[in-house]
Length: 338
Image (cartoon, rainbow, N blue to C red):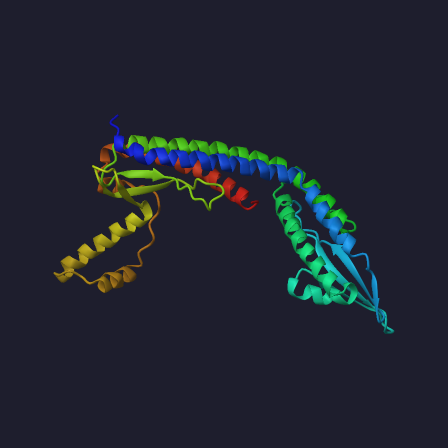
């Protein structure tokens, strides 16, 4: 097989970046599973600080008894759970008919004002900051626990009150969910390695690169914690033989350009002159052109003059497409937990 030596200048930096991203992702997923398994320590540490700051409750204010209540509601799906809610309970005993109100303390802007009569403004503000940090941990643990496939004890019948009870239940559920997450992470990494191999195989078979070559690329972005991204097919739209510099466009965008070119040519023949951009856009709107798929087609292969490679291109594309369904599902699952 002929090899484009200049292409090594493009491949080597990418392989280095890919290996770095893959190592970082492996560490990240390992840490995630470890956090699921040992989530209780941080939650308990944060919760005990909050409980210590609420020693003045219940508090009496002109016949109203103010209390702090921690509770949760069962989830309609038994394998998922809801986060704990912190409520200010106001029990009014000043009138003949006793009334009770429950006010959520989730809303940061009103929290200090609600707690100041019992705690004082300074202590209420300090408690509020600690509560914000705890709720972030609690909501994250809720998300982790809901990743499991077993019923949670937090949805069982019985009392659903008490901060420490919720922490005990959510951490047990997280530990169970961690086993499922570990299995999915392992499957994801196996499929991802297969996609890497297929991507390199696809590009290797397309050597040497030329104008209108079809290549396969996986982006490695610093903002993507689970990089690399999904394989994308692209058409080389510019190639400099001397420097090896190239530009490419994704297949979907390239197909749209092809359709626009055909439409422009049809209008040129019809009008017997070069159509304006507005005329082309108007005709395209009339035809309601659908957005093309991102898959390589026989028409695109023919356009790029790659007919003799047709069988190999379509065979590797099918392999990549077959692996993508499970890869995307596993990736979305793990992404939701980060």
